[in-house]
Length: 232
Image 1 (tube, rainbow, N blue to C red):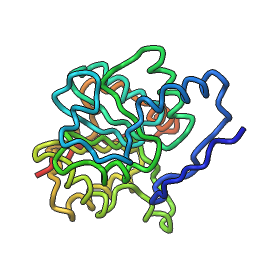
Image 2 (image 1 turned 120 degrees about the vertical axis):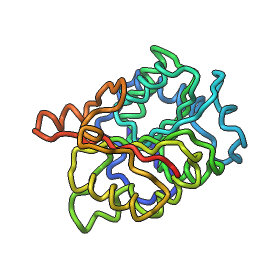
Image 3 (image 1 turned 90 degrees about the horizontal axis):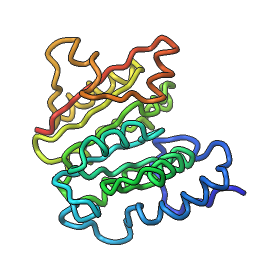
Image 4 (image 1 turned 180 degrees about the horizontal axis):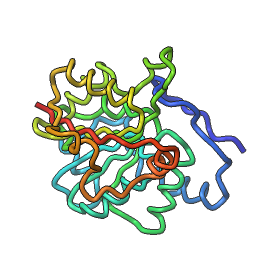
């Protein structure tokens, strides 16, 4: 059985939407739990994003393309007073996370399984306390660079929804994408790179759990860079 066709258009920042066919248990849990956790972009966003969560939270963060969900689950468990919006269009990754939440529920996570720009455009201004973008698709071929998520248009989106003083964090093992992100953030002017020495961007973030994509990069001899920008 194939996955249902999505109705919303995307801006083509990601490739294929599904891998192996979901197991019956995965599909059943996904179909039961995802509708309860998924953001309803058909309704106006609340002025106070904290009301999106059944847990009482005092901050709201967003992770774009959470992959296997290792970091999202780790941070949500580590910061129970923060709400987390996780966005992931890849069907198998979303199913994995939902099964994990079924086994170990967390009340401070909401999800969206399509293009993150749709969520960014839905959110109120200055409503997020942080955005994480870790190991995104690097689109290494020059003709595909326009599909990289970091762009002036998306940095405008980030700048609109991030509170002043909040952080945009970016990690990648692809040097050209790291340099691309530094150049685009510098050109944008709304983000201040928080680094004084090479150790600042070679050192993983506090309590960093690692991800399966990062492990793959290490096996292949690539070292990640961990950039932090503050919304000015």
